[in-house]
Image (cartoon, rainbow over all chains, first blue to last red; front, top):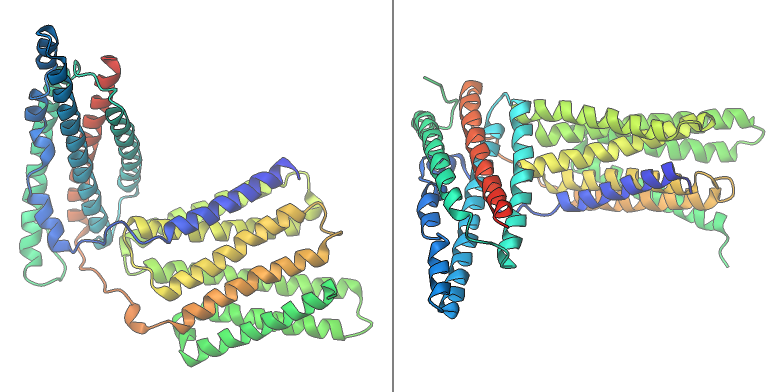
Length: 190
Length: 263
């Protein structure tokens, strides 16, 4: 069989595989629009990142090593790994919630901006890959704690930007949910 | 021992019987009004079976005439299947105006790209142009259905049982056609009977999936239309949500980079 024929057969098989994947039930059902507006106003876990990272400073474990308490240092590191994994879970949860919101918005809107949707698809792929990679590293215990100080500083900046974005979204959604409360008719923008 | 030609005749009879069962189901459940293009496709398939059967029973017909009629009816069937797929995509996504507008562009792009991919791979085989063209169309149809289903899954758009059945049947048939044709492309003369039989087998499987879908169809399955929001609000919220997603992503990537740097 020639190479082009092999490529076509592989492509057809890939399509069959994707068909099977696409027909699986979604991981969680779509949320009603009211939940979405509520969710947009809620505070986010990621805004607490600087405090979480503050508690993960590497100096703590280094001090224990110097005083010969290696067992305690190991226990602490395990705890920190669990905290970091928990934080990753929350970050992913927040990301998925935002994606869910964006899907609902797109479904409700008579006009969808293709570039923004494509941007979201790209972001969701990048995020999922990075998250899986980080989780894998943390589970294998590859994480050093020296970087957390730097991360803590960066996280504080990002948290500020996230807060500003949340406030802007909240302002728009409060207006939208007020209008939707008068019946599930078209919502006007003031 | 059963001869391959006898087996093929039996498969042919079974295919026609199943086509008639599906046709009767569509009539009884008045599905022809909901899916007119698919109903027309089904009708064209039945008419093709009758035409080909009549051709076999007509003696002294020129080979060229038989070839023209056989491929002419096949062309009509492929065209009707394409229309049925357009209708299926529309029926799944049309209630979501914005999503449907985006999906239309994407699906047309996918179809053109896949067709071009197939024709590019067929370069140099111009004597097989018609067959390669049909294979390209089949591949494009399968790709369009899969893209639509992935799209629907991403946006949590409800796809009812009949729509799923139609999508699965159409996609599996097209994908199998491509595999069957590509594998036997070089040796088609030698294994012509086997090729026809396998093609029929795939179509029988599709017919069974469609019969099951039509049998279980309930009008109550139609999903409710979501409330609409003005495009301005979508634009505002969507860009804000995107900026938050970008920040979260940056957050994570920095986390990753810090890990690497400190290694």
